[in-house]
Length: 162
Image (cartoon, rainbow, N blue to C red; front, side, top):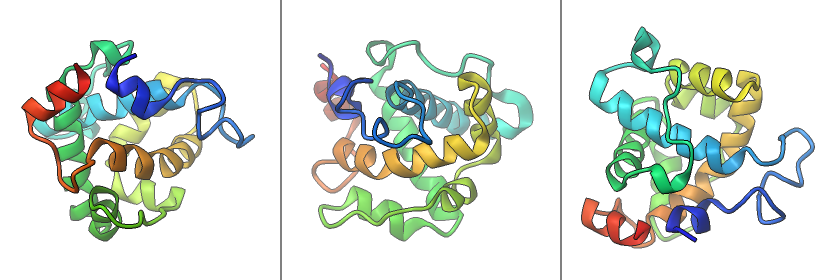
């Protein structure tokens, strides 16, 4: 089992979205991988909304995600949340204290609309469903990917994913 598998869980009972009837089961891990890959690509190309995001923006499985993709995605997520007025929330996920909750509406305001659109198209879910799932998964996922209260280095991420 890779580090990303353990952080994101499987689509089984350990899936934090599985008990919520509004969230289709089995989407948490692939959705988070796609989000991190899209954010990494967004950081290097400028904007997902400009059409630069490809139709298949993410690896098919966590084992195909590189440490650079995950780290770039985390950095992109941090930047977007800070630029859109939600720095306090993401900083709480990165730090070692309590994680602040976010609503689906806050997610849709914090993340570039082109990224939400790409995820919606890729998974066949509405933008509202994507925002709902991300509002539940992001705090825990970011918290677990930043165990020392900061973004890991690429070497640390490679070791974690090892």
